Length: 127
Image (cartoon, rainbow, N blue to C red; front, side, top):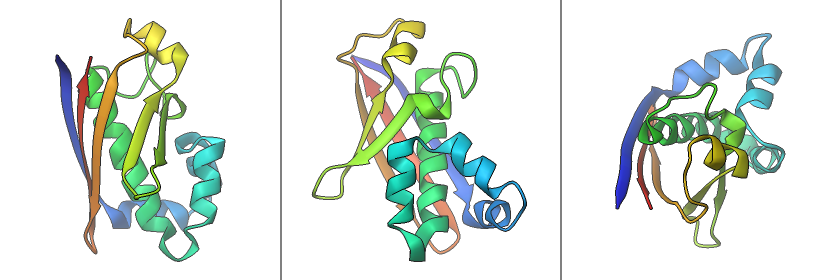
């Protein structure tokens, strides 16, 4: 059963401006888990696109859950990794599953894409 559908579209220049500001480190710590920060370090040439994709993906997940980023779900509650094929895999923290009263077996289908100027993500959450 589909619980929700979410999408997000982001101008990559918005993330570029943040990375050029004094708040860059704080932004990255707020957005990314430790595991994701390690992934970001490997993306040196495409860090801006990586972060824009992550931001867009996490926003789309929160929208699909119907709560947005806030008390029920934080950026750190949404963890995105990759299969060897490059397909993104999304998991929610056990704490957020409990707050949202969702089964640990919930599935999150995620697609992320980029152009030179935009990052977009589309999410379907099913139980």
